[in-house]
Length: 401
Image (cartoon, rainbow, N blue to C red; front, side, top):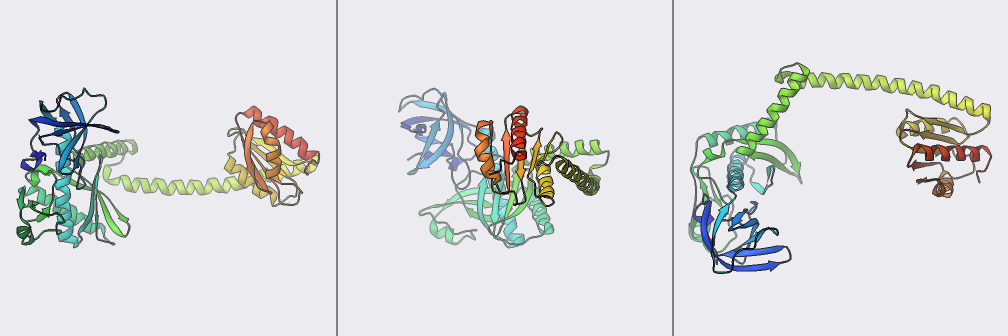
């Protein structure tokens, strides 16, 4: 069985080991070492990456008590079994995982102390981490208190220790959750805060976490999900937010503290302008409806028009207004979107969808609909125009059967 050096120390970055076995599987080559500091995926923490000799390790898993290292397909093949190789962990990635995992322990303990809410699950992603806690309702004030307290505990630089105990010794400890494993149990202790059965890699003191920042709080399946970042992730998040706020502040010529108030004013002004625009649009539609109905009455043909400045959504509203006022078919097109709408109020004696099905295939268009309305799309303005003219003639000639 592999000797797991990450249990001896989470800070081991380089070492030498002997290759015991090389396995070829569908998803790549797997290397088994006699000892390793590569942490395998588990407990919510991703597996480590790095180098074994000249081969790049892209993932690390555990199988039957052994740690297997998956090698990048394009890497040089590792040496033969029995060969001693140098091993190097991607330390920046490992330390990030140590910060996030230890930060999760501290955050979970703080939620338990302040909210009486135990942690139900933990996920460590590439961009952020989340915990789900057993709490259905919460307030912003409560979450502010949690964030304040967890960062106070960071600044106290509390020792974080890991050690093994027997099952009997574990039963005497105030563990967050009873362990399910058999045999000796690994304990991660944050001094004065928490005892937790955990096999992950952790920092040696809370001061190494630097900062924990809560990003979001949302309800997930009746529980509270907290999204957070720790350490360098939190620092990068702060830098990004500062740049964005500074840019907005300069753009709007207001202090950062007044941005929300200014944006609320902009939103209110936008709502007012949208209401005015809607009223003007209705007024314009009314004029357009009158003009189209008068033109159709003069010609005795369908209500038909191509628009260069109307969207398909605009034409749908216009068609609804027209079909409520005339028994004639309505044919409207959007030149900018290459879309065509055919509609009637149900008194014309033909099906819009059937007519499109019959005529579209030979015209480069595609679409369909039901008895009272149909819509078609074309690849070009010329195809739309040609079909529009053909259909207008057909509708005007009484070929609606």
